[in-house]
Image (cartoon, rainbow, N blue to C red; front, side, top):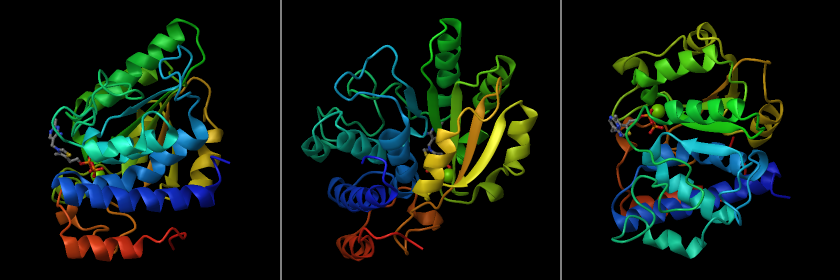
Length: 276
Ligand SMILES: Cc1ncc(C[n+]2csc(CCOP(=O)(O)OP(=O)(O)O)c2C)c(N)n1
Ligand SMILES: [Mg+2]
């Protein structure tokens, strides 16, 4: 079963190990944010999204946008494991002529619905997608993941206002609420709290969840839409660097590259059993 939480946990740890090794070898990447978001991506791609990797442009597919495009490493692993392209191609990450750019390019790689990287654009794009589905009376849904620091970009709030105005209950935003951005805590840089109240004020239906609990995430996404006529937002409480004790919740690991010794220590902690 693709959506068994225990199998997803084993796959998540396998991806974490391989992503750490890849970033160590390439010398580039955003390991903190990758480890934060991978459980959200696995849940969506393996249990929730109505997609067919063999027909990635099917008109009635659900759309997914990774707005925090710096976490391409996590997205590429999940797309490959789900069958959008060969797992072996992961080894080309950020190499010259690769389809796996540092930030996802939708003209290159099957399954990438929007090119992202400049923060603050994924939600506006997703609002346009969801509005298009409404206007054409089609039933596919749109999902988008943003970072939390990313919400400091003003474009998000214009999109939030539009989604509320147009009643886009076919749109789901997941905020990767790891409380860290580049180099510091969000609340030290430009505070977001009370975050749920902000979305409610813009007319969204809000839920909060542990963003590393596969069973809870699956249950929650299966209950969509949360309220008729309202866009949905899931504030997923996560840990940047999740799964590796010396990376987890450490501001210095936004885009630090693990040394050989750190890689060995990190991999030893990721043994495929549920984390406490
Ligand atoms: C418009 C824009 N400004 C700055 C950056 C550089 N940048 C990349 S990631 C990042 C921090 C993002 O923090 P957050 O959204 O919280 O993501 P996460 O914690 O999940 O890595 C910044 C400032 C960017 N990609 N785009
Ligand atoms: Mg963050």
